[in-house]
Image (tube, rainbow over the protein chains, first blue to last red):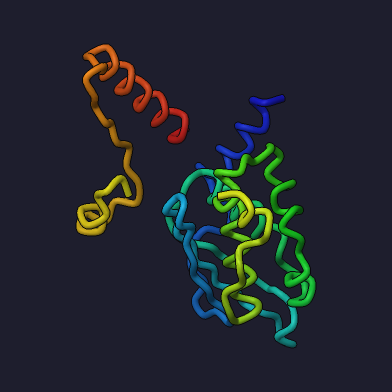
Length: 135
Length: 46
């Protein structure tokens, strides 16, 4: 069981989904994780009504957890409305990784979430409390 | 940044592995570290 989850994350790290930069794009945000040195940016394209996600890409360099998290998270976004994206629960992002994330790696796992929220809200958000309480 | 932030910025290195030696370390430790780094590279390269 442990191996399965480990392989799942490594696969997303080695062949990340949605890696790149959308040109043109409607939304953009970049941020980093001070505890690990991960850097990440996201570009999003909205639909005609400018209300839902039509396409998304993430870029940057970071640890396997941060990259896998972004690969998995971005796979879910197409078709979601901006309000739905704003309402994504950080716990859901952690669950999607499929392995328990210890306190030292919470910011790695949640960097993609933080960048995404920055993009759809037009401003940086604070780290979710689960990440802030840890390291 | 392992106290090497300027050199990491200069050479655009996103991450490093640092060995900090002390009086109790010997060549076996160096070999163990080198083996571990190579094994880790294999895991992440796929």
